[in-house]
Amino acid sequence: MVDKSTFLEVDQQEEILFIKLNRPEKRNAINDALILALEAVFSTIPAGVKCAILHGEGPHFSAGLDLSELRERSVVEGLHHSRMWHRALDRIQFGTVPVVAVLQGACVGGGLEIAAACHIRVAEQTTFYALPEGQRGIFVGGGASVRLPKLIGMARMADMMFTGRVIQAEEGVPMGFSQYLVEEGAGLAKGIELAKRIAQNAEMTNYALMHVLPRIADLGQSEGLLLESMMAAIAQSSPEAKQRLSDFLEGRAKKVGE
Ligand code: 1HE
Image (cartoon, rainbow, N blue to C red):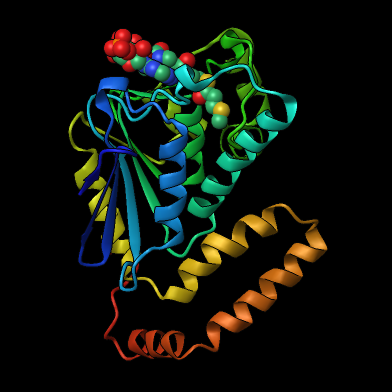
């Protein structure tokens, strides 16, 4: 179903929720209504959904912030606008289900910030990454300064903003922009394959990967190790973990790589 006022299409197919940016005539530029719609969708993931796929209609994932809405703002209005993006992207990163982003064409500015909030990125060969904020005379405001250096390193992000450097899909893989690279048109199929695998995990494991792993990365070593031990103890005591362990020991579970 496409909501014409927000350009967001949401479609549940069994355990997977497909969330599509559907504004191809503006290259899926993100206006305020669209970012609020993303926040709403990721705040109300239906029961039964185990993984979400975020993708975009047309040849580009997203051209970032809708620049036609960038009007004269006071400092306080600018703060509220950026914090609105932070809220929405926090709902993606720290929501209830893992999110696979499927990218093609432009993944720039706010579009890259949204992709960086997802848990896995699949890039089609056509994908390119850029942070045109540097050239537009503004700064990132959707969380890129926190999330992107963790993926690609601070020096690379600064280079992109200083120089307007555009990174192509293929070079983006070893740099950390995406974990998977596929042919043009094959992104959604790969995203579905990954989502189905993710949906088979114990819910506790997916929760720990989404909520605990990034928090540990932000902590000092001794606090991180303690939090890891606590998470490990909780996870191993769940009935699902006990079942999965005995399935393996009694030959009923797949081996690594199967
Ligand atoms: C837009 C936007 C947009 C396209 N806001 N309207 N983002 C940028 O600086 C990227 C700006 N966009 C581009 O560089 C190009 O559009 C693309 C490389 C993405 C695609 O090029 P192309 O040739 O396929 O499309 P186009 O002809 O440039 O654009 C088609 C239409 O979309 C056109 O409108 P039309 O009415 O003339 O048909 C464009 O004006 C419109 N369009 N991108 C508004 N971004 C939380 S802070 C985040 C800060 C940022 O994200 S800054 C980066 C903004």
